[in-house]
Image 1 (cartoon, rainbow, N blue to C red):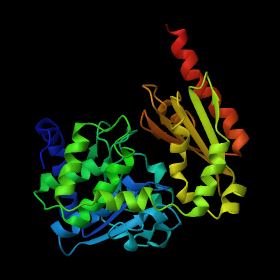
Image 2 (image 1 turned 135 degrees about the horizontal axis):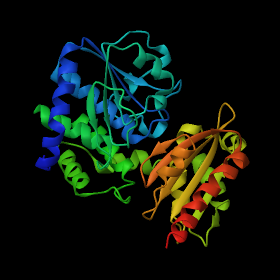
Image 3 (image 1 turned 60 degrees about the horizontal axis):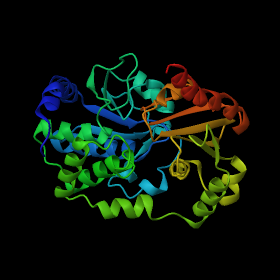
Length: 341
């Protein structure tokens, strides 16, 4: 795999530190963030296989942060069947590796496992908060956590197997929005090419993630599409799904992440917002930007986080209460920018 020598050189010391942690550990737990997406799960499963193949004999466990199942569209990923809910994992691992997150509060129920672990490592591409890990790479200019995992394999001189490649390609395809988002840089395409050469199937990823929607999901999509509303001369678009919508269509919350892309398709829209009610009297929001406006600022103000062009948050209350808080913040992105002119 051809990689930027400057990037690999900058990452090398932290990769070496991570390697020392792995070598010193007998038991290793790997976990991605709550409500895992394709990057979270694909990167986690690939890293688990990488560690097991490089250091045979170690006890490596793949965890789910939530008391939930693997989202249906990602159950095709090699090794998905071995994912264990953190609430069912009772060991005290020597090493806990966070993948696709660098804020411990995004671990949900897996945070308890992290807190009883001897060491912590992080591989992530989100802007980080206060460092809580012993070693790792956090690089926001990487298109996906899968890019960093692939480059760690390269650093180790390890072979990327077809199963690892499939998981990492899913990570990269989903976090770049099929290479349509602003983060689809040259590094992302170089890594994707190498993964295909290693045995990954783009058509298989597309089939499972984007071309296997259940009819009930399509009906829900039609409801969401019919509710799209715009503000700021069409530059902000939003829609939502209530608990009643999800129940009427028999669609679980875990299958709703792609609905924000329906809102994002509105012509002239620069910021897209999708809200869905989730158990516990809460609302989860997904934000996407099609311009250079940094929506992660709004997500952080709402208690969430993410990237400038893709972010999310969870708040207490219902759809109306969430809209009442987040819409003024989104509109302020425009009033602040226009006032600065």
